Length: 263
Image: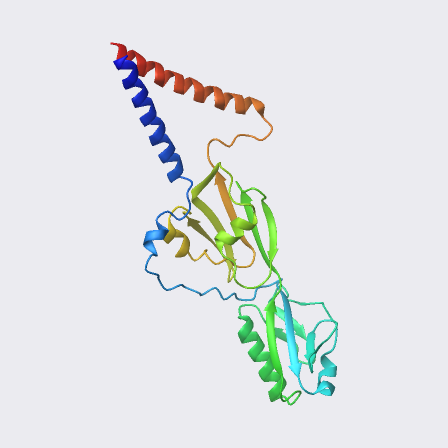
């Protein structure tokens, strides 16, 4: 009876440690409650640079409706005296980084922030005497991020606005699956003619929040690697093989423990 009680205690301990180990591998940003208890400054440098193929909405505002007429075409969303023009076709940045703007012609857009592009267009309209009180605002309308691998709904999604975090992108894909490796997310980014990769450990808050990939950029690709338990989908043979192997391993361990206790 004593040996049986000892065996039960050892088995319970093993199960507890196994549970703790599995929890450590799946819990996000562990220790963040203590690490940021007293607050830290947030790096809000998530400003995007315009890239080729981006869709831009450019708003032009003036009090003089007559001066706005040359700009009222289908490629410009303009506002005059509070009335929004009906055009809904956005400016598409060409492969070489330009947009075709009414009257002003081709303007370099790629590599600039929306604020810088707006300022340059506005300055030209004013300095060339086209509209003296021109106000220009630019927004990036196409923000595509692709999340692949061990997530609930992998695929490419479009977002509005300029601020999207890695955690938000994962959340919009239905979160990671149980088989996802949370310590090694791969983010692939193309920027300034270069392709870069970043590895993010979702269990480590500093790895998450301090990563250059925390704020998503246009066309980022996030790959979530599955662990060894993820077998070929649709293959029942693999599933039964994995289950059988696990049961045999557990049975062998328990048998070995019983033999040791009964000696």
